[in-house]
Amino acid sequence: MRVAIDWTSEGSQHLLVASLVVGRRAVPLRWTAYASDELKGHTHEYERAFLRLLITTVLKDIDRDRILLTADRGFGDVETIDELERLKVAFILRAKGCVTVEIDGWWRKLKTLSFRRNERRRGWGCVRYCGRSPRKVWLTHARQRDRNGRWGIWFLVSNRRLQATTATREDARRFGCEEGFRDAKRLLGFADARIGSLRACERMVTLVAVALAVLTHIGGALAKKPAPWLEYVLRGVRSRRRGRSELSLVRAVTELLDLDASIWDLLDPRAKLNLEAGL
Image (cartoon, rainbow, N blue to C red; front, side, top):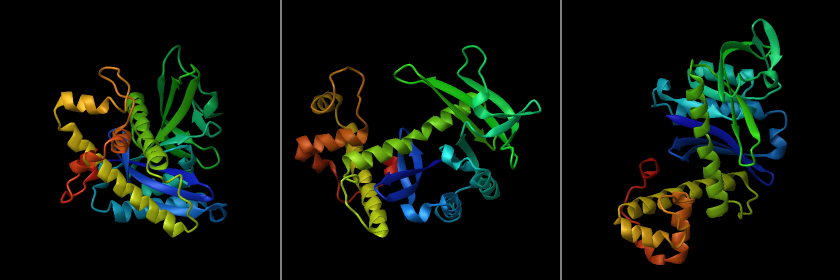
């Protein structure tokens, strides 16, 4: 059960969101809104409290051995690592390049580590992490070129012994929550909302989650239609490249609803909206 933790912001409001990663998208599980002024100097405290509540309440019926948590480099502090260890949850966290690790008896900054020849991933084994307050973690070093040909380099730390390929692949799944944020902001109106109350902001995210359930339910119904008819309908919103679509399910359904209101008829008002099954 893959859970991604990340922040997203709109103006002075900041949302900490835990999402269940399903395929290439993510389902919001829990979220909390904060104002900019209350985060100053307390961000990591709120993150750890959020994690405790997530694991002990929202996911209390899930076997801890089944949970794999991933998060960006802002969550890679040793106190958060300790909290996850106490909760007995497996994690893969990105680490900042300025953090030091002990390699072959020498403390070095992560950004000074190198690859062998043309390799893309390198496992450094179990190392001592953070010179000021060392913790033992499993370290993976990975890189990939972006669309402009520049190398993107990242460092992954985990409390589980994973192969470099496995750790990198699991971290890549975390981007499902980023895609979910994009869908919510650009397609479902979250970025256009002008909300002053933090509680109202949290309620807005609830509406976004419901909208995702509705759209994926319609998308699932579309997928069951005959292939020639579906191809004809989708031609109005995507490119004509065969065997490929640049659109996500959520965006495709959203744009189809703008073009043809009869698509709404695929939504069964008696259906139970199971977002995980829909995705």
